[in-house]
Amino acid sequence: MDIKVLGTGCTNCKNTIALIDQVAKAKGVTITLEKVEELRDIMGYGVMSTPGVVINGKVVHAGGVPTREKIDQWLTA
Amino acid sequence: MLEEAKQVCPTTTRRLVGEGALLVDVRETAEVARTAFDVPAIVNIPLSELEQRWNELPRDREIVLVCETGERSLKATYYLQFHGFQRVSNMQDGLLKWMRKGFPVIGERYDAPTASASACCGGAAPQKTSTGCC
Image: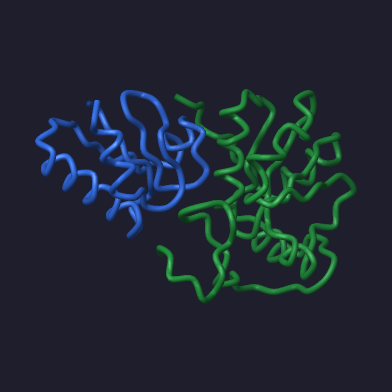
């Protein structure tokens, strides 16, 4: 599962990455987790509110840190 | 991959407006009430409303996005490019540079950025009491 976190590096973005990493490890799910920090690249997904989360090329979340429950749902493939 | 956004200076912006371009000011209403760009063709669509209102904008006319520092307007420029607009440019350094050059404004002239205006983490300029990022 390819996961990208879109954001320019602020606290919410860092927390989102940490939380996704944590949930993936707890579930034993293998993911590639990547930060997308350049504005031009972030806007390529049309995401205005960051943090944004993109899974296998699809935007699944935008704005604020996602809840643990939501992340769990994404990782339950 | 989006094209690199076109960046224009205030002087070029004035020329473009003279040639029929539309200025799109993405600052919040309160900011515009304090100080507005004094140009004949301008609309105010706050960044926080752009996702709902972008299709009010013309595709067949040059558009120059503006804000206080050029940061929020750059985001808005890329957003419009994402929606297929090709005739969009960002005015670098924003209202602050516009005022430094003595270009016309309606309202208060000032020279320091307002602390609450930021493009970070979401569309609206965050309130001063926000515990959000940055």
